[in-house]
Length: 384
Image (cartoon, rainbow, N blue to C red; front, top):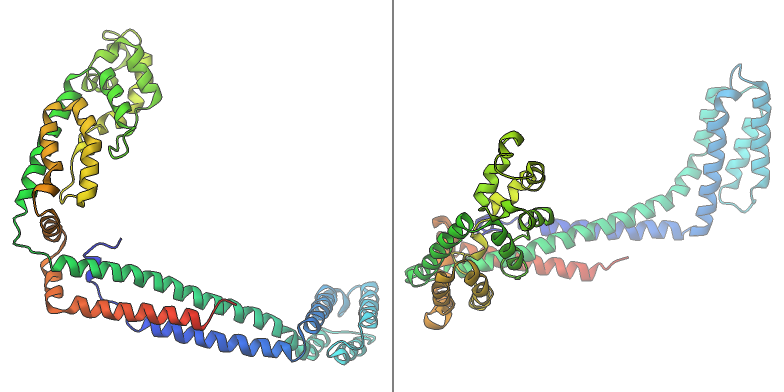
């Protein structure tokens, strides 16, 4: 979703009409191009285009050896190929006479580059007629592209409408509501669980910490990353696993000679711990905390239920505070207070003024109208 501050930017009210005009013009182009093809028939134009391509290919291939003081054998071969090519053409081919005229012109005793240029000019009417197929295909592609741009813009407008609706709703929140009735219990719980987790991480054996993290990683709304297998196996199987996480990280910075005074297998510790410093340093209480502003009531209750078992493992003294947070939707005017908290956190003074002045509502109406207009255009000009 676009941020609330993004929702404060203006909307281009003209580009929607421009896109619709482009699509209308693209449809006219398609209709004109299809009619131009229908005047002669697609199959007939395809035959003509194939003949033109082959004939032009002969010109390109033999121009250099057949002109000036080129290879005489190649010159004769070229004239024979041209004559044979025209002989094999159906006389009912569109502009057949142009190919005949080109053949007659090329059957000279000597050819120059100017002669080849003259023949290509003779072929211009053939190229123009054959190009009707390319123009039709290009017109259809332009039409599809115009529809794609409208669909893209319509999706952007849908997002814009949602953002503006949210901005308007937040701007109507009661900013004088006593949000501390939510904030104080949430902050009290967060403080307790942070302190208890840091103590757990600091004092308990790394083996127990990683075992616990492996269990917590299986809880959906407690987003801990499971310990890497090699690290977990090391602390489980080696005496150094009895040391706290901080001590293992300190060991990982020792040289192997110094480390040999503290652990039986310095290389094993280096392989398992030194390569996993980022994971061990990143283990923090964040996944156990409740966000501020808090989530919607149903999400909060479910998250607290999921957190209870996890918190009981690492911070049992914080469970009571967590239960107090869970009761907030039942014991307070939760949605009003939460909405006020979100508005205070996300809305700038300028955005509040835009809501108060009606600027947001006006922009929202324009965005809705433009979205509707684009939807109607897609119905008017369907896929083809």
